[in-house]
Amino acid sequence: MLRKYIPLALTVSALALAGCTDGDAENAGEEVDAAIEDVTGEDSDTFEEAGEEVDDAAEEPSLN
Image 1 (cartoon, rainbow, N blue to C red):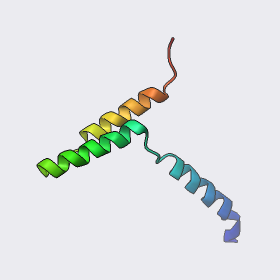
Image 2 (image 1 turned 90 degrees about the vertical axis):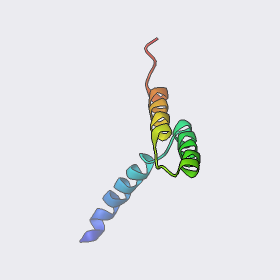
Image 3 (image 1 turned 60 degrees about the horizontal axis):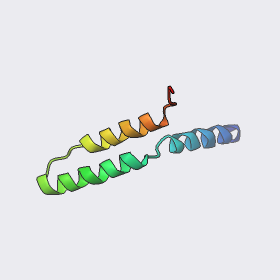
Image 4 (image 1 turned 120 degrees about the vertical axis):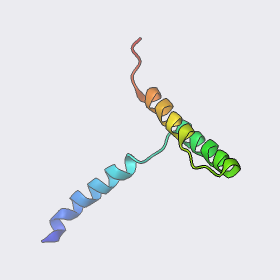
């Protein structure tokens, strides 16, 4: 009975994993945040969030 749900579960899992990929700018921001955290001891995602915004902007179609 549960066998009919296996393809659905695999599809959902694949889509979830595909949505979790980081862009280059986000990865760079994570590294900067980690370095700042090592120096200051404070946990901040400021540069990671900025990297996400850059990646999102790069994915948007140009209006030109």
